Structure formats: structure tokens, C-alpha cells
Length: 440
Image (cartoon, helix red, strand yellow):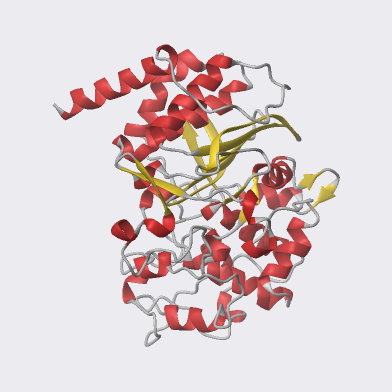
């Protein structure tokens, strides 16, 4: 019976995409490098409504330039502010690609080796107490194979009303969190089955350790390092971890749809719990190196273009070609397609590398296909994963992504790959970090 219900839902959804009329929000900011396509817009709007996205900002990149962009819906529902390419969104776990890129810039300078023990640099000893003789390396932290395997809920949602940096962070917090006897220590954060380097387990705290290593090795505060060596060189003027530095009126409000109603994140105490609900309607995360970056589709396109083009954006190099290739390669001991702060997955027969991000009220996507030199960035201020939807919203999400990747190809593969998308969902082990329920 369950299989029949799922089959009916999928069939209805696909047919409805092309047949049923949808009342949609006004499109804003369309660039006509690709021809206008009302049917395509209708499809995106339909899936947007089903997924519960109040707004979406999107761009498609070919080679080294944006060839299409669009905004759908309202990033501020009460004020009816339309989403645009320069609307700011919190990126959640896409932030990890920035943090990883920063560390790899220091690697290029010969300041450490990927297989060096991080204890060479840290002022405390980082070891899995279940495997005390096994070193934890830079490569392991970047590829989620360090044997850190769980982020307790209290850690994950800890939220502040102030911008970083925080006085006790990162060293004191990391000591309290990672070391036995620490204020926030919980032994469940360490795997008891897998030693460092042999198995991939998604961990936010690993990237907070990376941010601290960046500070130690570069002798610059992490925030300053990202500004000076990534955001400024790439002309990312509306990107940063400090929300107060930007025009708050241009920042998308995270909304979470729950049983048909939209809530701001500071109204979700019934869902998250009174001690975990953010105190305001915007995210100011303590785990900012792992998930607290704010940016726009336009700004982040500069970063993605650099990774798509051997480390170069608009004549400015931030990484060497060999380093970029290394970051996108699946690393040893990794069964989940992780590279170094990036990972690969397949949707509808299209292999892509990049990263996703998810929080209540946040769904983000940044991936590219190297063969076609085609990239897609997708920001939304809603998250179907945290709603009550079939497949946790992944089917809806994957249809939007597939539609964006095939738009540039004029949908010539649409029909032949239609069935393979569902196969990827139900059969293949596509790891989307947000579906693990413990990442940003």
C-alpha cells in the first residue's frame, strides 16, 4: 500500500508540473542570456509552492560568467519584498567551502601538510579517546573522516544575538567541547567504531577546529583572514559573518512552514524547544565557520566561478589549479564522496560537486558539473526537510536542481532522465548533509 501511495504522489507531482496552472509571485531580475521560458518559470514556481519556499534566488553559471538569474517570491513576506540576485541569505553549511578554501590557501604556502597531525599546531591535544594513539590530520578534518561523529542538539542550535567574534571562542569553547571534563563535553561526539581516517561522518565541529587552525597558522583572526584573502580579492562586497555590517533590510528572513503556516525562526519554540529557539528572526550562529556566513547569489557566483576555473575569477587567482582539483577529489577512507570541504553527488544522471546547507528556514545549494563547465547557485529562506513532506522534501528539491542544470541544455535530456531522478532518490546513496539532521 505504501508503495502505491508513493507512486501516485510522484506521478501526480510530475504531471502537475506541466499541466496544472499555478498562481505565482512576480518574477524579478531576469537576465535574458537564456531565452525567456514561461513553462520553466511555471515549473519552478510550482515546486517552490510545494516545498514551502517563501522566496528563491537563483543563478546559472556557464564557464566564467552568469548566463541566467532570477528571483521568485518574497524574502520578507509581510513587506512583500521580492527576491533578487543581490538579496542576502544565510548560507548554512556552504560556509564550509569558504573555511576549507581559506585553509587550503595556507596549505599552498607550505605551512603544513594535509597528513600532518593537527596537534603540531593546537595548544591542546586533539585525540579520539577511543583511539588515543591515532593522529587526527588536516585531511581528516576537511573530509569528515576525523572520527568526530555527532553534534549534540544544544551545540547545533546555540545562537547569540551578537556578531562574532566571541570572547570565549574558539579556544576555550573547543577545549570545553572536545576534551574530557570540559564544560560541554559529551563522549558521544567521538566514534567508538571507526578510528580516524577510515570512515566519513559529518561533523560541524571539525570545521570550527579548522577555523582555529587558520588563526594559529596565519596569525590573523579568522574573520579578517576571510575578508582579506577571499572576499576582497573576489569582489564579494556583500558577504560576511557579521550581520550588523550589512543592510538588514536586504537580508532574507528565514521562514519555516509547519502544517501549512509560515513561522519566523524565533517563533519555533514549539518545534525546537524554548532553550533552543533563536532570540531573533535572523541567524547569528556561534558555529559561524561551519554555517553562519551571509552572502548573495551574485557574490557567491564569484567564488564558484573561481573553483570552476582552476582557482581564478576575473583575472584574480585565489588557489592554484592543482589545489582546486585536490579539493574536489574524493578523499581516502571516504564512502560518501567527500573531497576537501566539497563533496559530489548525482541528480538525474548529472554528477556535480559543491555543497548544500540547511537550517529551519534555510535551504542552499552550490554545485557545478566540471564536464559541462556549468554551475548552479540556489538560495531559499525556507526548508522542506524540516516540514512534513514526503521524502523529507528531497524529491521537490532535486527536481528544482535538475531543472536548473538542464535549462542551459534546453531540456534535451529531460525526458530520458526523468525516471533516473527518482531512482537516484530511492536507490542510490546520495548524501545530502542536511538530510543527516545534524549539519548546517
